[in-house]
Length: 265
View (spheres, rainbow, N blue to C red):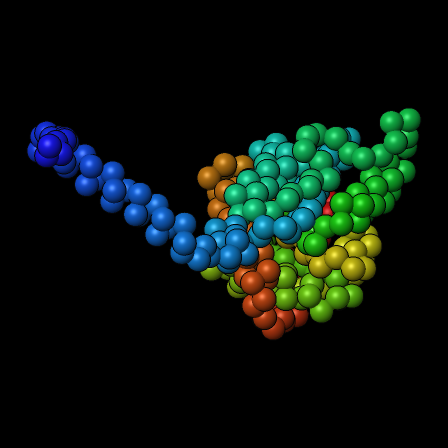
């Protein structure tokens, strides 16, 4: 007796065949992607988050009972310093930095029971320096504004304390970006020897940015504008990017009246 052959007939429509082919292609593509070498996470982080792993401290000058300089229009330095500091914080965080701020509101760091203004200011500065060190910051950026009796002076300038060679580079790169983006000064970064917070940073590269003169009516008006504040913050941020990328820059001592006309900083 002859064996009976069993046949199975599978009917496939055109649409079904297309689905099968697409399914096989998807499987093959998945296998291919899984077998390819994935770029190193370090390289990916470098290009997308250039400040990843950096702890950067921002100091918004003054605060609390210490308002700093005041413009003729009534703009108070402590408020403008904080506004720019918060803009700068956002730029740095978007680039992957861990940002710590000596203040995020209208207050100082002095002990609550201290009533004498001069003592509060001293305690405040000492505690700001301690805060930066305790946070193991890799950079300190201090934001201030200038004011002198004459209204004719204007323009931003970046200062540094010459105890670390990196300070001159950081300050010069920030000042270069300020000159390029704001176009309001030809000054170069300059040394300053009277700012306690900078002097206390014996191991942390630091710079103090006097972002403009509140004693100049035109510049004071610009400093009170949120768009201009963002432009200032962006300039400082770009200088930081250049510094952390290892760029070098020579420094000068030119500063004109601004280097000697520091009030309330």
